[in-house]
Length: 198
Image 1 (cartoon, one colour):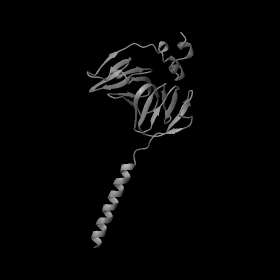
Image 2 (cartoon, helix red, strand yellow):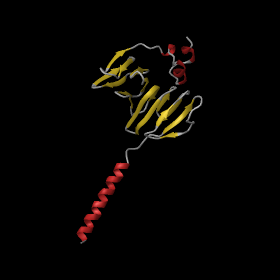
Image 3 (tube, rainbow, N blue to C red):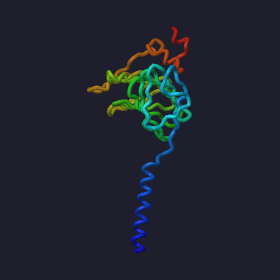
Image 4 (cartoon, rainbow, N blue to C red):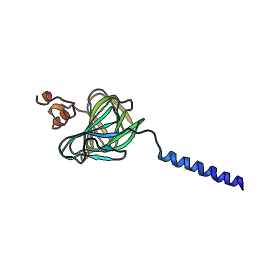
C-alpha cells in the first residue's frame, strides 16, 4: 500500500511539473506603444502582449519591444506579435508598411506568407502588398538576411519578392524620399524633412 501511494504521488508530481513547463517559457520582452499619430485605437504607454494583432487605420504607430527595438507602423498596416521571448522575437507582417530599427542582441524575425527576414543590429523597411502577394524589402542601415522558400540570401539592396507560384524575386530601385510614403519615413526618422522636400 505505501508503495502504491508513493507511485501515485510521484506520478502526480511529474504531471504537475510537465504542466508547469508547458505554460512557463523563457522570459519575454515588454511591448509598449510609445507614439501615436492621429486618431488610433491605441494610446501612449499602452502595453501589448504576445499573440496580439496590432492594426493601424489612418495614423502611424510606434511600439518598442524591450529597450532596443522599435517598430514603426504606417497607415493601413497589420502585424501580429507572434513571439516576444528574450531569445526570439518574431513579428508577422500581414499587410502594410513597417520600419524595424533594432540594436538588441536578439534579432527580429519578420514573417510574411512565404518569406522570413532577419534584422540584427540594423534597420530595414518592409512592405507587404497583400492584395498583390508581393513583399518589398528595403535594408536601411545594413543587410537583411532573407529566406525565400529554401533559398537564403544576404540582402544589401531593395528586393521585390513575389509570393505566388513560381516563387521569385528581383532587385528593385527605390527612392524613399520620392515615394508616396515619404511622410511616414520622415515620421519614423528614416528621412529628414529637408530630404523629403527635395
